Length: 280
Ligand code: NAP
Image 1 (cartoon, rainbow, N blue to C red):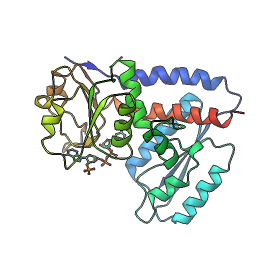
Image 2: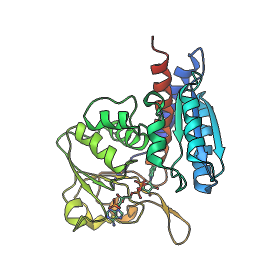
Image 3: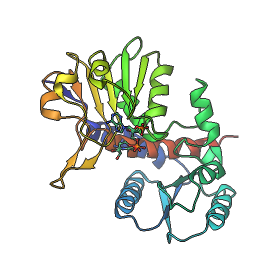
Image 4: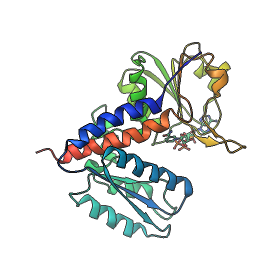
């Protein structure tokens, strides 16, 4: 039976240490989250971020705009936040309404306040193998989880399923930077099972139930990033837990695996950016 990659436990450990560090600061780090529209899932994510920030001693502000805010007004606000020395980290909750260009908005955030690590500067650094100001939250959380359980990455065959800018691409690059041999799969990949059967590490970020035990190599490590609701409204991951946990050596559960690590990374990144901006 696979060992559980326990994201909640690691979150609690990391955030307790972070709180102790933040308690020693003269001023509070400040995170601003911009939410456009009233998507219920986004509202839950944003409120969870605020709650966690409070626990750690990070000041957080949620700015909620109606879905018809203009792109110009949003860009103006980001410019104002970029120039506000009391703000250390800016997060724009995605997705944005169709009339607003996500890339324009992301590109407008100062790289030193880009808590998601999505700006071209931070992404470019990551993809050139250099150190960005911060790493994207979900990929960073995945690597923290693998490292906590001493899972070797170097020389291993890591199969990443999904190629989004939020998860798939950056996690593949971070694994490559750690000397894994990386295969990236997506919706056009043929014979997925032939590829997953050769994987030492699988990171699945799709949002559909696509991995079953019979597709796995014995003792592989599985990180399940996917979250979706099944036909009964139950929260599920990409991986069929029952069949996969019999074959794998380690597996992250949904919920309780990658999700808590993403929010942990957001708090770590906020504090890193705070320290960066307070450097002389
Ligand atoms: P996304 O932008 O929708 O990307 C999904 C990826 O899956 C795409 O690259 C797509 O391929 C690929 N895909 C779709 N069907 C496939 C199939 N049958 N076989 C192989 N690949 C397939 O999603 P995302 O933002 O990366 O998120 C992925 C999942 O992770 C979602 O369930 C999301 O809710 C979850 N998530 C969780 C966290 C967390 O903290 N736990 C954080 C972020 C995301 P194409 O590129 O070819 O379309």
